[in-house]
Length: 233
Length: 84
Image (tube, rainbow over the protein chains, first blue to last red):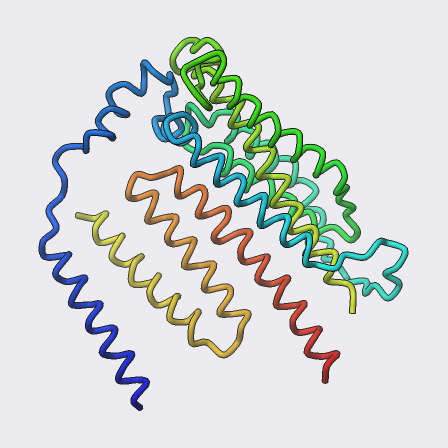
């Protein structure tokens, strides 16, 4: 009873705070100084048609590198704590019946979804989307494959090679920016190209392809690890 | 005006689904409605003109997270069975 009334008081207090914020709210007519700089100079400085990508990859590139490292860290922790046995040790595997319709549908859909994911991260500087989104779409294709096909074999060695390669190349491209252009993760190490075409915005497409590969393989690895421990007692 | 009404309806559905996710006794239904909350959130992001965020929310929030929850739930149930 006391606990419930305390919760009620807490909710009412929060509601009062939110109400005062809501009453005082007036929509902003102008952009703030930083946002205004991005909106006005983004086209000349970065050359990406999608301004969100310009901010995420170039102006706030260091944050993106941090996000990628956090994702890597969580994938590594999951892989570390799940006790994954080798194939020969797991004798009592339960064979689950898989639906024929789901399996046939997955065989048609998985390549198409992977293609969509690749499209999303290759065109990240032109259309909405980018490395994270494309990588997540590719990972969801692999999830479909894992749940629909009877014995899909994920090659974790290939996954980790692709992941390490793309992570390393991302940092190397960032460091090249220090020597060849204005600073860490500057995209002008390559020519900016024609605005709005696929080969534009300097190093942004390359960075987004690397991020897409890294995120895709990492999430697939996490799901694959979770799938592999399902069949053990 | 019509978009405001659609957003309001979606918001109400979203709140209902999150209440279901907290209070439902069956964990499977709770997980599914938590995924539904993310799905509606991604539609709302799209209405608020943030397609990049909407893509992330749809792919990770309602896709991968739901699957990870189901895998973990399955594993926990098996452990309970062994202990009993």
